[in-house]
Length: 604
Image (cartoon, rainbow, N blue to C red; front, side, top):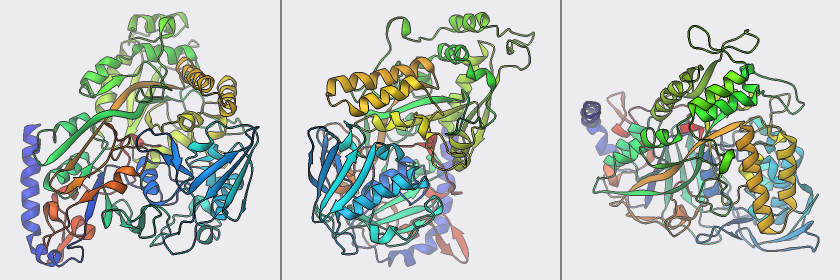
């Protein structure tokens, strides 16, 4: 490892020396004197269109750009006013009226209840518009506007109405869009109501945002927020160390250890809100219940899925893959940071590492081992040889694959790793069903209804491949009923119990197998960022948080006259300088062969 870093450092020096010819030109960059914060991300935008974007980096950027009815309170994470300044509900819980505040879009036009009504009605009537947040409107009977009053009538009471995850879009800009599934929203500057306005997006390279002077809370403290996309985590770490970027979140333990002792970097290690799990192809189907994909038929058998679960040493994965910076998942998809909603298995129901028990389950079910030690289907027709689908160029997933391969070999199952670039990964694991087992995960919001909804029958893709957003192709009557019950349960204690029963159902049926809950590992440059407030404010998260608060409150030193290091200029200069007709790419961007890449295809 030391030799590798030595080579990287030498390579970086050579590149930086080669790039000195560009420095004079970049020093004149108009960004000099502005407060600019550059955030690194090892994931690029899947779309600038909030109706269809599902990656974590996309939802984060959209959260900085657009207003919502409510947002999590920065201290308690409970719903607090955003574009909706107040609300009332009828006694039967079926009618909600939101008073939309007198705010402005970034183009100066007023934000109205009609904007919100159009947003929700578009999702209710356009299958493609449901891609990102479809379940949020499934219980809506009608949505109307009168002046600044937005009225939502429900089919049944909905306890999570104040946790709606849908950004409100400007009707006057978006109503002309006729093909939502293929609309990329690449028009700049964007028309936004949140703290920032998107002014530039270079696909797979960066997004540039400027402070919104019309934001109802007041203009952010900084002038510009840039998100730089890296397809190689080591390059992002190097960028943070050299000052090419100012903040980097969602690090792996190995990456975090590389910055822990840097005197210029504040290392940030807190409990995270992400669950990592294995997605099992237990028989993928579309919304019309037609089978799709080429998943291994053995995985339709619950006994096989249970055996896989018993074969996994989660503590070893935490210790040796996550370097101890995670918690083994003895529960489901809600991480323990949310104490109220967190469910953990106990007693006979708890699945602990027990390869002997896993072997017995398979033996009893008729999956016999051959001379080569690999099991076959009970009819002898096919060996238990599964594919494990991961992302390209993600070392921690490679390491996870090595451990799982060894675990499953102990129970007579062969695992072969398949590496896919991110857009192909999303397609095969969420639409076409061409996989056996895949790595996945979700960054869970304070109310877990949204992540639960990704396992509903309705989240499977439509026959034409549109819509969807499934995390498991799960379609289970018991789970569906529990979801409906919690949706209308207004007694919070009873609703929490229903949500825990949903987690238990996922645990016992195993369309997914939670493996660990990762810590939130981040770092920012103390010589550039002068203040930033996490969410929640007490030992909370920065880039990985469930609200815009850290990046609304962030303050930084103004850029100087130099375009190198922590005092850098514009993003264009950061990405590449042209020297003598040759494109020279700086240390932080050396590995950027830009692609639609997402570490663990992080979604929210």
